Image 1 (cartoon, rainbow, N blue to C red):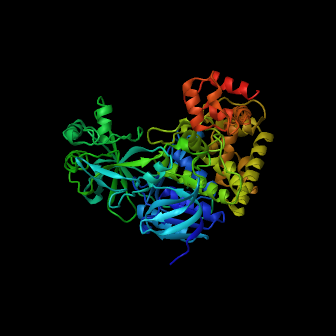
Image 2: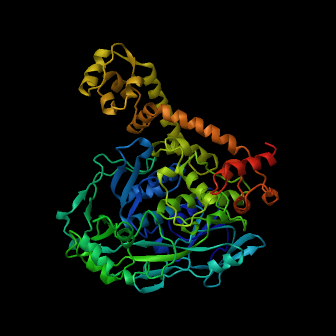
Image 3: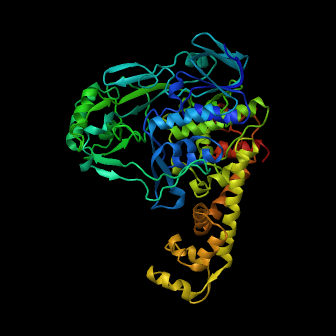
Length: 623
């Protein structure tokens, strides 16, 4: 029928599974992607968008390492925005509105053109073990497929249950069955599991909406893109989103269904995402607010379907419809489908190592919502890292781990493994201690060489980064060594009400002023001539601007990283016996034994571990 022996088997074809399969195959491992429906690979289950605050940085990091999410996002984009432009560059976050169908089609096409990757449509209901190692999977048809490594990326499908008001039924996504069996298999092997919840809003007919009374939300006038590669181009035309608001009347109508809401009547006991609450949760928690924003997002270039961002709900469909009809612009709304909540199984991520390999079973990796995260970008990042490490595992190579100072991906995984999560985990810029270093514009500089060294990022990608750095260094050196005369720059400074110079001054010093920006710099002939002569592109100009303007902050963060690295070098032996350290608190012993931190630095980040606990461990380590 087909081959039944592989290096790596990836279970699930969502964002985590797609990136995992691509990474594993591109690193030379014979990979099989098993999914319940080959037509829904890369499906956007919730909003048709990629990126956003901190999430955009993750997509650029995935792309810098040779993952596919950035390229797919660019090819299927219908709008591009760089969020947080009014703040510092550490906060700038790219986001695209996506064509949902085109996004999935792009993913399918890219995966089908990936060498070493095979596909099989089925449901995995059991796993094969060889003592404490994984040995393959068993499908619902009883087919046994063998492999040296397995990556589980089951999303919301593990015992998934969909809720709409007082109705509920099994399902992993609207119109798709849940996956049963794997949770019990893993629990029987000693894993802990839990339940989480997420939700999605109604989809409506755009022809039934009155956009003229809503606020138009356009994309950037000069859009850029996610991928650092030349495989994609920036958008030339874009579709607009629109914004409107709920009202006191809408809130009153929604409250009429609270007694039938699974969130409030005890039907749902699991925890949902705190930072992406349902509309009923918002009006309950923020009862003092008279209105909430509603964003109308088109689902693609050639569809009338719209996604109602900000109106996620599991209320009865009649309540959803009645309330939404009272939102400005929705008076004649027609539903394509109501919103719903979904409960699913997850496995607390403290049961994993930083490679995303499980501690209990060798060769078994978890990635995505099975680890308690929420969001396409967080899932894709984990899938990429699991795919890399599964491939390295079967080759007998050392795991590839990104530190918190390397990438948002490193922050994400370290948070999960070290702290765990009791609610769906979402990435924010505030979670990263070194966000000035972890900017979206320098993801390629930070990560492409690391990825190339392990065999993932291509030689062409590395050459492009080297060229960018070379050009940037030439430009920065020019800024630092070249002086500008008062008569050349003072007219520009005067127009900006900025203090004039009285003698020749280095360009870098003037450029470092907060109010002196690139468009001011480009008014100087000496600068534009130099850029033209050295063929400096916009990407290099922007990267160099940040390096000049924020050099003090960047230097300070790099010094802090060096201090952190000293703690990272103090490793803790794998079999260190915390239970024998009576000076430790009971909580500290329990958590240290459960998480088994690899270094003093990681131990210090575990919730409930005090500085005195760290001192006790250091003493017993002879430090």
